[in-house]
Image 1 (cartoon, one colour):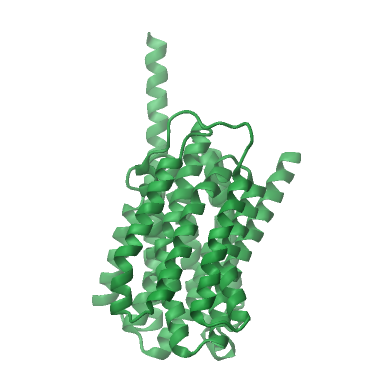
Image 2 (cartoon, rainbow, N blue to C red):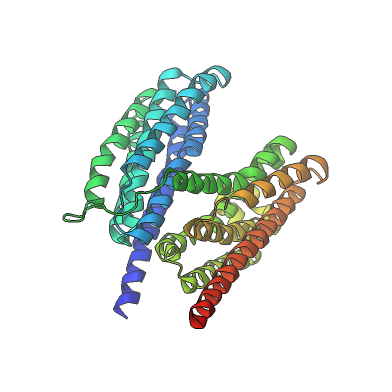
Length: 404
């Protein structure tokens, strides 16, 4: 009972940290819309989108460290962590001149956003150590610290009436200052790193899987922007708030389950999928019953009449919530290319919407749901095949030993 109580407390803490982080991420553009001019607001939104893509490396590093640590104990991770940070910084150095020129972004503001992003990537190592050790209460605190550093300084600057560049300068400073606090949270006196070090390839695999999840879940929004009229595109953007809510609401289950998945615990996988599935079913049911209210909460009273589409958006997010769990299970099992099915599904979605699907809100939304279902079927089939193969291998080994 105490163990269940501890898991419940950890789940609440991690959920609270996730709500805090996502809340701050939403507050930044909200305050920006009230404090900045339209051109500066556009710059801020563009920088947030760019840094979110590069910041995927932080999640990949966290997952890779957590999986390796759960499987091998406190193993060395300094070298792959440093290489990940350097690779992210190098990617930013390549992209920044192009972004500044092509997207007409101010150089100073772009550079400050890049500094914050590099700090966030570095944080992935310590978050992964705490997750892999199943120290979920410190992990929750660490997630809050990283979010506070990443967004808190920008929020404070904007709220105080500072301009865009000054707010981003404060944000860069707080992002860097968060790292020593995170290091102290992850530190375990007397524990010495030993054993096989984390491989750089593991970080790449986890990062690619995280990026694929991000791309496939945002592809329909970009397609709607490209092919729908402005009013319909705006309505679609409101609908994707429901998709993201259904996708991320149950992700605390994946965070808690990952260390056990790394140890080959199939019961944890089944339980995790059941919990995420129940959460998704509840959200889809709520969207079907109160779709108008859901759209009103997401976008305001002007979108109340679109409630009939709410279950489609919620179901898409619910499917991707399960896919995210399955992809993490593949990463934890050491699969070589766990992200491959998601890239294929993304390509099929783009081709379908571009060439065949009616360019209406319902047409794009239905295609996105079909893509999510296909991704779920394929990733679920691959996980089931891996489990069946591992069981067969164990039985074969057992039989050979008995013959000897």
